[in-house]
Length: 210
Image 1 (tube, rainbow, N blue to C red):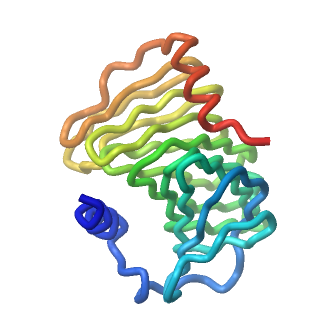
Image 2 (cartoon, rainbow, N blue to C red):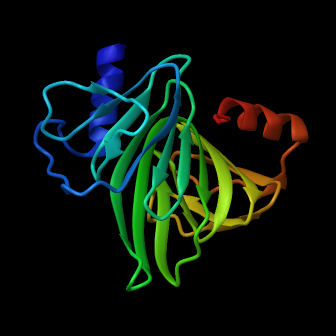
Image 3 (cartoon, rainbow, N blue to C red):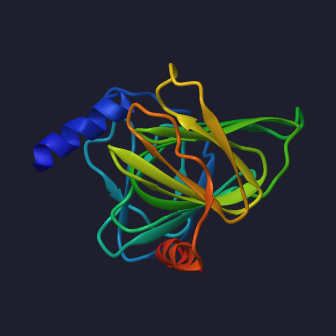
């Protein structure tokens, strides 16, 4: 089962761990950590332990272990907190403050994470992609729980546009504060609805890290 799971993750990421290239410049760093997490660098023979202050680059994969949480602060002050037993790939992160441009794509095959996009950038494309969903934002905070078969998204504040990762499915939903949706493989997002506070609190607690 574990071998099948690893193969599915490798297929989802679309690259082998030893063949991808990445930009030399750091795009962020590990800001805080609870428990254990590792960073998988393109071309590296083995994962390295994540420690506070460790830089992260495009194409890096950050994986938290059971009981572990890790907070990443990017160079534009975007903060992503990865809950336990979760995997995140920094597929693309380009921030050009002088040109007021940003291009970001974070890929998450499974796990739970909180994203806070603090900075408004006029020319910005910031997306988070899971196996079943794509979320596009400008300045907001939301929480996502991703699996290989379904993704749940809830907005803490701001606005998030959610669609299927299957580009042939055109239906999307716009979530506002307190609203959520679910996106299963091969179908459009469910109609948005207000999430009960118990669910919001559960998601928040699982991604809380000072």
